[in-house]
Length: 211
Image (cartoon, rainbow, N blue to C red; front, side, top):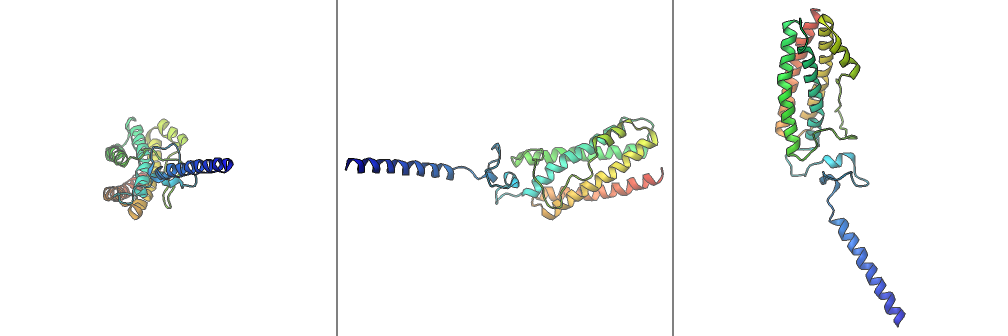
């Protein structure tokens, strides 16, 4: 009888321990809602850490749009600054670089504010990808160095050629947001980017034709 009671006590204790583990696990937040965790839970998808609550007014496409467009815009501003630091450039090119910088710098601030309000990182998380989205049009470091050292017509041709491809990449990203996004402000910005940058591409191709 003593052995039986001892075994029963051990069994009960083990059952309580197991129940405690199960309860502790169920109280943990889902990986998709735990933005502060060091990594996703085993078996969760890479996109899970950026999925908003189902009742939110934004979705993963909105988050990805801002996270990808911020560095894309930042490079366009950098390229514009490189050109504006040069002397002897055509007024039309200087005007274009000024307009690109004045348009995209505030948009960077706007998208950064959105991400912060959504409790999302302002930089793109490695491993996240969406169909139709990509960082196309980004200029490599070597080509950026060539732009920095170029002068006169060579600098103008490099800038316009690189910026046309850069704009085309931004337009592709913006179209993905229009098709897949949920946040009305993000979609409106994407539509504005498409309109303005398509017009600037036409302008840049016309300038290239004069060189």
